[in-house]
Length: 310
Length: 328
Image (cartoon, rainbow over all chains, first blue to last red; front, side):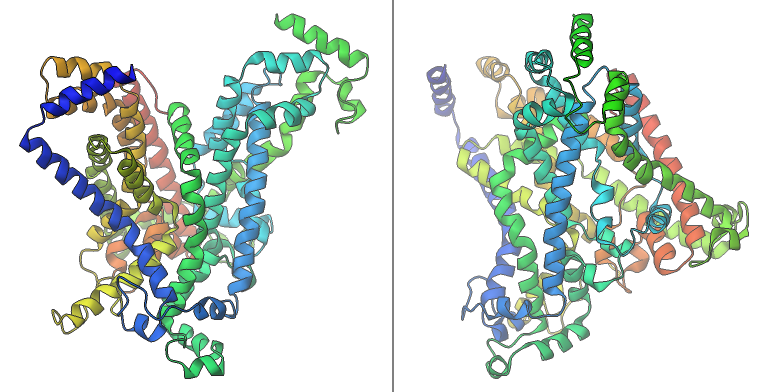
């Protein structure tokens, strides 16, 4: 079969005409440019965050880093609020992901239990919430009533049940061989035993997908900080980045107070608003850049299952 | 078959070995299995209720003249005053028109460019080199996974007066004064479109790429035997077969016409471009959270929700009629 395909391809290739080569050339060129357009901004941030700060501030670093040093990364962590924000972001990502994955797995499994009292009704009760929204102000009022404003848990609790994730887990569990469950049931395994011993181990591929989605969502979210949080100790890294970009004057003050005396003498290592912005941006984007290529296929799988069933 | 199963279950219940040891009280294990299963999901149903249904009660704020720290009972009941204000008060109407213009512009531009991911997928599929294809796909989907704050950070570093573009142009002597790109009221819609395309194009194409990968290769082979060229294959096989996916995406876009979200527009918003960037979601935030007109913001939110649900129902009905399949 493979050989037949190759022969066919060869036959087609022989028929290629100059205009086909021209097409291929331009096609490669356009996609190479698009790829570059997506890569360059990240590259630009990274080389500027490690280059000499006086050069980066005057916009001289565009293609290759110069005067490489890591002082910026040591300095920004001395900024008031940054380590706290990093901790908040890491905690919400870890906790939020664990809760969402466990809840999605459990609910996905429970909604396959046909014996449940009014299963279909409760399933719809959950799914339909994907299609309506009370709006910003009523949500804010609700969070205030529940004492979740200015609380770390506002990042976690509302995100536990996500109908879309429950749907894709349920779809996956339904595709597993029914004999697996029946055997366990005959052995007298209770519902929770079946969940922990059978469902969790066999659903890892789809749970990995849910986990990645949840983690990226938690890490990237800033809107909840903006709306529900005024306490600076609970700022997430994303929100802090936003405030740092916009408040040039306060950033300049931070800069003055942050650099050590020795570093201040050295222009290349003295912090500038530009260096701080770039460095924090890199800190915020680096986790995504590392995990994304590793988990790309999980992302794709998630959207495909969602598309089939969504 | 089903009866058999439940009998086994009952038997095991009676012998007392079933669930008593798994965190469910002995009393509960005596109740029928169907209630027991239901009890286990109650905590989650409570969460769904608290964060999706209970907030609907907050719509009542639209009927009061609500002042922030007070209790609702301490505020005046004003009936439909806010809804009337929206359509009767001239300044309010004017402002709302500007906001609606922005909302329509962003949504229409989004819909008008929704064919770009299709083109992206079709042409990427014409590339034979596997590693090149993978590399393009990985790099172009990356922007989808960064937050809007980071997109703004990138925009700032590249296009601010002290950013990369202005410095390079000044160094080369092409311009003497920095061009204001982000702090300008000009081309705001176009800028927003470009950023959302940059962020979403590669990701939007993934579904179509998967669709194309699923097309039977024999179709292409048969067409080639009949002498069809590249363009004929694209026009007569690839495009028609991914159209259903495109149709669903288009319908969802239309259903979300008023829901632009505020994440993108909030970060790019400033004093200069505010008039051209305020879409409905951002407007609700601005007047509700910053301007403290909570009741008016709630009223707008209600109207928006009602229109969105109506659109969804219409679009779903259309889809049923045309394709015989619902999209939700």
